[in-house]
Length: 554
Image (cartoon, rainbow, N blue to C red; front, top):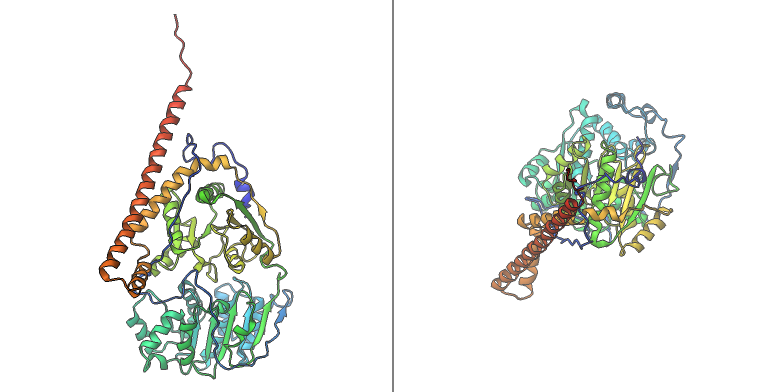
């Protein structure tokens, strides 16, 4: 089913989206705080949003010559059967039970090369089967000489780690595969025990794996000395710089003699950064299918211009209108920070939406539960940070909404790539304030097309401003009561102590800041609530005064 944003929003009727039919209010500013909170027992930096980029990891010695990409056309690759690629019969039979019969371009190009022993640098869009492109040959070689640990796969996010492990387990079912997922949010002791038992496959996030290696150099650091395969999924992101400290002990723990497989959805400006990780010159594949554009033709991309003070009201108006006109649709909203993400989730929940949230500061079980509920359509809306912009297996998202225009155009490409996958149609909508014009222009320059403006009736939006502001303030208070952002406060406390303040002065300062935030939020909430009651009372008076008088009869 094709769902167009313009069809769902521009056909505004008088009776649609009535949260309060009599309410008309002036636009009020809606502010939000920023902050983060680490979940319990989490030492990862795998999901950290808004990290500063640093110089890339040097890695092992390498051939300085940058390989040229092998470009494969859609016609001669997508029709290839797995048998033609040299895949073992037990794997092809297992793939058939999973309803996978033909190889995608990245699979057709990379599987034979991996089976031949080559290193791989593969670039293909999200949703093109990159995971199976390396999982199939790894499992085939494992079946010939099974031992542990045979392969180590690193990925930037926990959800992606579980997703990759699921695919390994599904394809490797006939050989009784043992696969371990090493991510934050789980017991360090239990994970150390799993690694000491040497499973066949280890899928990990770099932060937690580095902690385990550094905590036990005698045992954990040595279990990877005989790995056959080292895989970096979302390699461009893994080598941006923010993971350098975590990757260093991992590189030191793996052997020089190995096959290195690097997979990415995009090509970075510096291909050498990816090339450095390989111990030899890799086979470079780039899927050029529809590569003339950074985003697919089936994706409808628009933007809404709105004042920053009432952006949340515009957001609620658009999402509610779209959801009511497309009740079976799914909407993914991207927020800039963990706190903003959770605040928006609480706000939408308070306004009656079936909504979930996905970011790095909630427990792992909650994140997996939210993903599962969204996939099954139990939740119609999910609000997330860029932790969900890459790799996650969500079959179809009808509408992707950018609450903020990303600072990096490449982030925009990854976000909107959650929609219009596997040949389907989809829509992407970005909210642009007076401060985002240059960011929008950078996005348009990157994707090579001009985005169309979606005109929204401002008079209709004003009906929801007050209620949205109230819901947002209540969400902020809820976050404060939950001590959301405690990790940030701990770091702030350390900074103040290092600056020379005494513990008593630091305690007093932190308490004053907290009291000031809570008092300000309550004062604004009381003010908005009072305005809402006055407007309702005024509307009731106006409504009663318009009632026709009954004429007296003689």
